Image 1 (cartoon, rainbow, N blue to C red):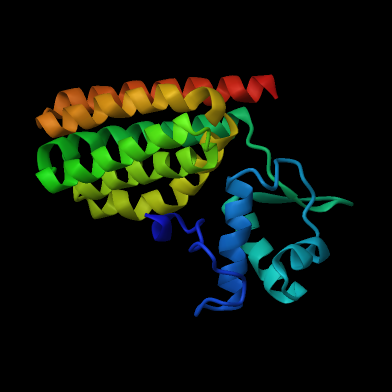
Image 2: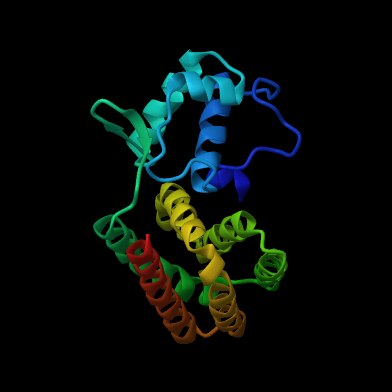
Length: 228
């Protein structure tokens, strides 16, 4: 799922060493640092600073900044330039309104269509998330959280849901990471209920588990925002 999310580079790779355009490598790395909290909301991102961070010229940095601005990760502030965006209550509420519709439908369809092999993959993701939570690796937990939801959408077999999900779950991962220290253990338990319902082939239970999970995640995200 790393390729779907577009935020994780292969271990050991450096900017310029991969067989993809430099601009795209910088974009992936920039997204990753924003989503993982290395560049925090409100932090100023100058072209010179990013060029130095990534060991590249300013041109690919400039192009990458345009993309993350269009995606909503960066905003342009008068007299400050590019700044990492700070999700507000409206942005978060809108995101979760979409998640509620998307994830409940995906859960219902997944319960109807999941194979035994699909359930094995979901269980593996749950186990990896548990281990990452125990090891306090919250960036990894956030990544696995989105991977699990994307896998449920994939299992649903609905290509329209899949087409909508890629951009959305970059932001889901970003928002989850901000409150992961508190949210991770609860999210893991809620995911178990969801996967149990999918494995049981119970669409109603899967939809209800997805609804409860999104509601709890929304409340937690807004609570985190209030504490900042």
